[in-house]
Image 1: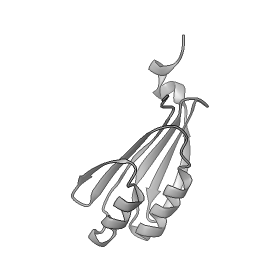
Image 2: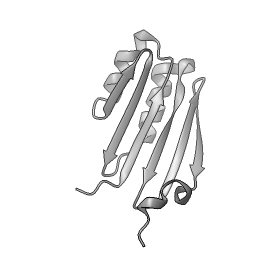
Image 3: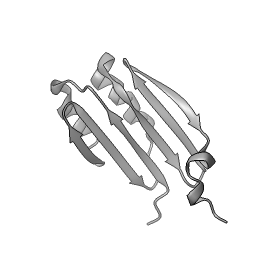
Image 4: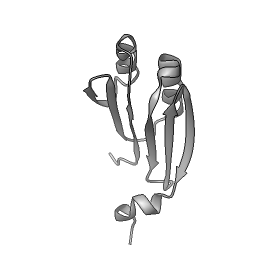
Amino acid sequence: MTMHIRFYGQLRNIPQENLGAIRELFRDFELFEQENALDFEYEGVYIDHEPYLEQIQDILGQNANGQADMIDLIEWKMFRYVISEGSVTEHKIRINDVLEKYSAE
């Protein structure tokens, strides 16, 4: 199976009472936990990442803090989502600057 989507990120300052809900949200992802923090990673075929971002806001509210990146190697696009104080801001990243080593010659 060709892996052409990466969706990964870090959430910080997660209140203990919300950690279980965040784990459940990312149950199909690789998870790495530290105190009050969670790193998540998905690599595979297409995934609709926007519902995950919305649910992070719903679960964490004003406590949401972190970032997520979505890379599409087929469409050659990358977006960074900054999660801060309950809102998510999208930034388009120039993928050639980041992923030069993956470009076909």
